[in-house]
Image (cartoon, rainbow, N blue to C red; front, side, top):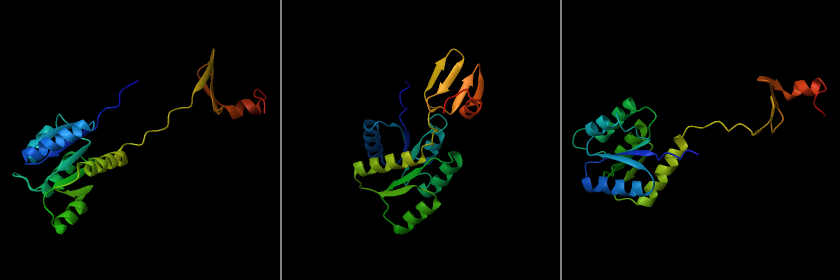
Length: 171
């Protein structure tokens, strides 16, 4: 059985202590992380580190986080971005969410609340996998699925309905 791969989170924050703290908490929660202090550095990192989610500050030294959001969306379409910022301006929050950010969290914040939001976002954006096929019973060249709706005989696929109509299967 394959082990479930850890989700990958890119942290973009110019505050070294904040980056380190977030990284420690996220790794402890089972995530794989890469931390960058600027948007340009983070964009360079995504060539080898493809994140499942990005935590992005707004007040960054090279590119404003709102402009950084657009760059990440262009480079990594579909990857959710969560703003984690010290800015408490309602207009920036609205603009960030309107531009496509999944959430806007202001510092200081409760780490358990942030972890819960990350988990919820990742669960929501996870690809929906088809259900596994039903178990099958194999006898020589006859394969019956347990639900009895499909039969494989000598490599040919048959509907159980065909066998029932021909009198091969009992009612």
